[in-house]
Image 1 (cartoon, rainbow, N blue to C red):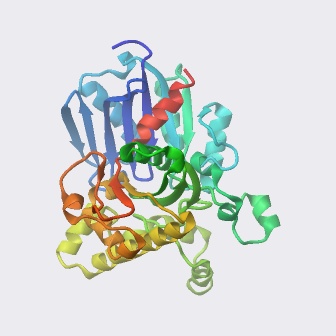
Image 2: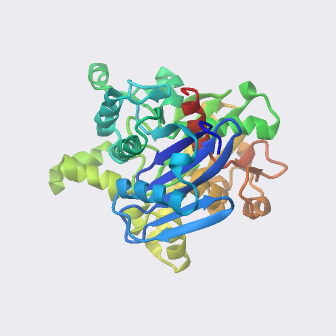
Length: 397
């Protein structure tokens, strides 16, 4: 393989790691895989290279172990990373706070600030930092570049970014809406005009990034004007283990009546809420299995999930005024046809209509699933955060 032509991308999420070796110029994935259900009894790594699929099943203790196993999968499949022509390593980092908006070359000081910002993203920045540390040990002579989820949402209008609390407290402690999944929202919102043959500056899009973490955004002419996540990735849609929107009085109530301290509440909100808190599982495939078996808790969890999603679609239709497209992306958004159909059902008078046959037709690529009569195009657009991160890192080479 030609020297210095590829970028290794590491995307460490709260319970999974996506990794890819990418040709950023040719926009091609060379090899890659997914480490999932980290910390669960049934962890799994699926790796693909040259059309072949490799799988490893077993407990994966933590993100550091997952990354080392991923490196081994490259070698086991016949591609040694030391000989793969890697020019840079790109890292997804969830929270950049007010410190980072653009892709940033990682130094010791930058890594320390990423760790410090874990107070705002306790589920995400720690595994992000671990991924950086392990990769820097393995590739000490390569540039490592951080690409921040919050970057795309730096354009939010002040009215959307400002919380209605004491302004001096907000200023002193950096309390504002930052938004997350920005790399995905930016990538998908740029793909939509191309797919519809429209000018990007004249296209208004609602992007629904639905994975274990879930977020919505309103994008006007390529510029983000609203998003569901806020100071932290807790706000907004119902997620795998996080509740999304919550009356803050609930926390005061639980502190006063149940004796829960800050640590207890942190665990409750980040690990014991959302789908897992309501049904006992956070994997959408497992939720579907339980629903099929008639599990009432799983069915209610699904209905809460869809109800919240519908509320945000309606809100963003109002924020944008004119919507040209609604795009579903990420694991649930790309694969759960029932979610797409149920979330948008009954919105015909608002110009939104899903074609049931198109929605349920098999397919993995970008596709339109709206009815011919729908004024708003509804699409499934596979996200490619890894390509976006690779291209950002490539610019430093």
